[in-house]
Image (tube, rainbow, N blue to C red):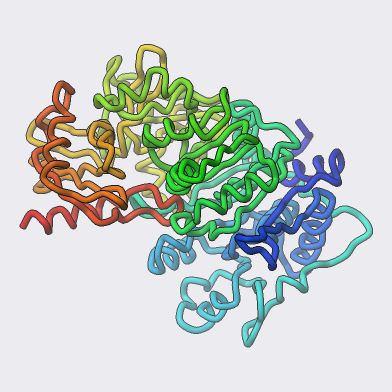
Length: 548
């Protein structure tokens, strides 16, 4: 460990140790499906270019501890710019535009960034229609053409120098970044990443997944490319819109893996659910991979089974569990899932998310929507019972920025320790594994008590013609009627036979007879970040409309 903290020191070390290794590979301007091609930045080039940006940003007025609003497309310079800001000791603020205009503007206004690095259209909107949201900004840098607004173009911030840019020397609790939650399950909040938290996450994931310098990683989740670069990976960006994973053609992931003989690949479940059938239909096997990873939503058992035939023998499909506030929390691989867990999922056990990660402490507490200011031992649930997951440890964020209510509802003080309430329901099994049972906010309150959604859905998702299901409650809280929305596979149709078969699936389980109404749905609304988390509030309103 160095004497000071700074995320950028990882890339600087890799640039010194392996300067000619590719740090980043991204689709070239001439890329076509028939002739895929990539451009490359070596670690030496990446380090030099981020030094140039750091000098230019500093000259433009970017200072240590400044909050920097980042509204750039996921392309090459996004990651170079991020590491330039890390070098200065500035704090990038990462907001997903997919959360919607109203929420986006509210987040921007609340977080109050002094610096704004954004595409031309956003600067135009800043100076015309939405001035209030951007009123804290003083330093403006434009990605692309700059018109009447002030500031500098990003391209003019590339400044040569004879010496490496000096890394800001930071403490463990100094800010590293602020990453906003997607808002798919509530108001988006700015998660504070401090330097020590980032170091702990880098270390925990590295050990959990055996990440090594020189690994070649196809990365379909833009934010996780930062971790790849910290580990010394060659990060390959597939030819798809990383902001809209649901639109990613499966052949783009396969082409990226094949062209670079990648041994690591990461994508959201919605991408992998297309890659699997595509590979099967084309007779493709992903022989170069040592590991494939997904996160962001429960992983369907059929996807895990499918990848067993696509990956070479002994290679696992991994489903680590965590959140923006805590990365990672737990981990499990496909060998353990297929050996003993997926059968239990089909009987209503929930989704096994495995064993606690290095450095994390997990407890399950009584389910309540009330704030819990101070920890008490009697908050814990009994053995085998479902409770809300709370976590503490080095990789856990201790606060949301500019969100007093968010901190009150999600943080529990325990002396010098801060427990984060994940907002997820789970139970432990006898082996100490964690079984995810759904979001706390998605639980139903029926006349018979609390009903978690994921264990119920796991039963019905086993139907071979069903793509996915979602349990929602119709009626007043405390007397909600469980209704199952059903999304069929694209090639399958809903009919009476499907409904009858679904009814039989629950027989002999703890949830037999719980669901009496099934509603076919053309396509569930999902979050923008992973396109996998179901927007259940919208689905509940739809189901209530169908019931009228």
